[in-house]
Image (cartoon, rainbow, N blue to C red; front, top):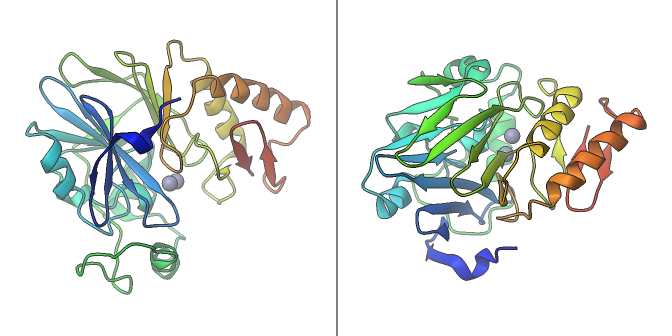
Length: 268
Ligand SMILES: [Zn+2]
Ligand SMILES: [Zn+2]
């Protein structure tokens, strides 16, 4: 298991940058209850930024320190805690099933609720530019759409797109075969339950997606969108067993609550 505490290269007022290897960085927001991570992957020709955080501070300030290459933004899914700094970057990609959310917002999710969630349990000083009363999630037209099986080429480093709906309809995971890194967004992380209990989620899709990523060969490290950075690939075996158990017990349904396993939990 990687101990990322030892790999912190920048501890800014808001962002914490951890070096995962020479050309891969996690950009974390530990000052917020959600402990969100975005990831910068640097290739020979360009870099990919997987998600852009909460939008409380400007993430470009950090990525400018880490690479001079052009950066493309790959969106794991269009929840507000993953698209915060999208507006700072010229080239945004999203799965085709969430293009309309990026352009028009998520219907039925009130701005009051979003502002309440963004402003609570903040433990670090926020920049003067952040005002929870006027905070507005990013909206804009993406430059490109992602599909299951797409390969994003960064130059001697390719990323494979896996469509993994459930937590949201157009959620994706990204696999970097050159390093064995699997970026799982909100499909898989530790400490707090991954969930599918909102109207736009699907417990059935979520377990199918968990099973799908558990079958990817060559995973050496798992990087989720929240909580601890760098999970052991052995977790994928736990996931496989968990899915079997959930199905056997007929628990893959809304309202069945939190189900705990060794290393992760899920809430329906
Ligand atoms: Zn989410
Ligand atoms: Zn999230």
